Image: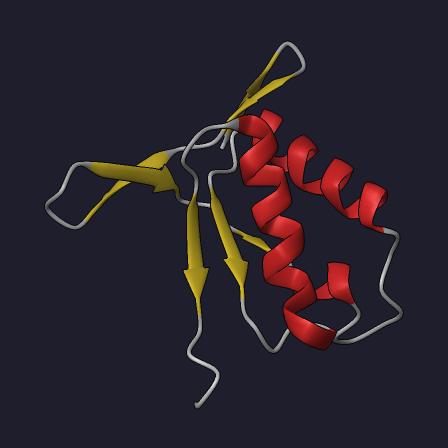
Length: 96
């Protein structure tokens, strides 16, 4: 990650054979929904994810077990819906 004049470039990597590209640096969303700590307010979680996206992060890790009642997936989904774009969301199967 090179930083020039206050801007940071997050390298991208090709994922699979379908032409998808994602940031090499991912953002783990687990702590936003209270898996390890108290959940932060939804507006703050949305703000954090949007900030990461604005800095070039396009790879977000979420799971249905991060927070109560799929809270983490709903949070990430609300951000994605508000951007009206496609971001890659990596989901761990909950049965593991």
